[in-house]
Length: 355
Image (cartoon, rainbow, N blue to C red; front, top):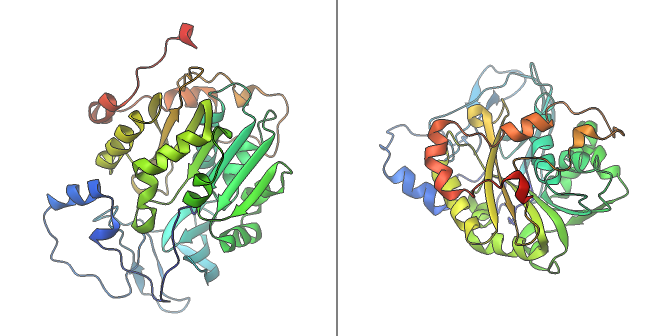
């Protein structure tokens, strides 16, 4: 999950402290009713939610704090820092952890680990692509690590893959430290565009893609526009009739208000709207959600994969670690609390005969 938001670069070398104005309106509304904390943050606190040593020699820890996950921190033991750098847009950190292998963090926020990246990459790619017959043209917004590309490339029907990533340094770093993910860039069907995601999709011809996958950052700061109505409208315009969108959609444990707002907007824009989820241990709350939508046209039954990737005879790259057709169907089963909070915003599941 990462880096293709329509964001602009930081104006100074110091990490930018995120405030109320950086949050989506629905998040600000939810926080307004919460009791105010008397605790103050040290000036070195930056956005994120894990802790790491300040250096290889001292024993102190810096605890990162992100307004998307107030009062929560997640620590990973750092065995060795492999890379530290700053691009035009963000700080990039790669380290070796004791339990999860190599870890990529952007602006202090864990994006992926070698151990559990399979859950996110496989689900965000195969949930949409296995729900439509023979997808041929696919767009990825974000996804500079290459993992989503790797999964799309497993689909033999796909003929053309565009990826729009704003930060070339992320791509270069991942090619060096995460070759099992960045292998996706080596597929000849992949066409890379270094650009702002919103600008790119705004300039895309109408009905260009069978599927669009938004592997986005959390909606903080400039990335807020990725959860607003104008963005979803231009996404819908770029899809063919019966085309599908899969969008990273936060945690049902932490962000039901934000998920409700995204679903509500998409109900006004798309023909069908569904919410799925998967377990990813190193993401806040241990789960991540996916918003799945289809445009008017041939009906799409997201809950029953019509194009099962796990049944294909030719295995490209390593075998799937997380996704299968059973997990696909189960991903749409919501816990009771989430069902109560979200069901009024979701489309009625299609009957098998309607597909």
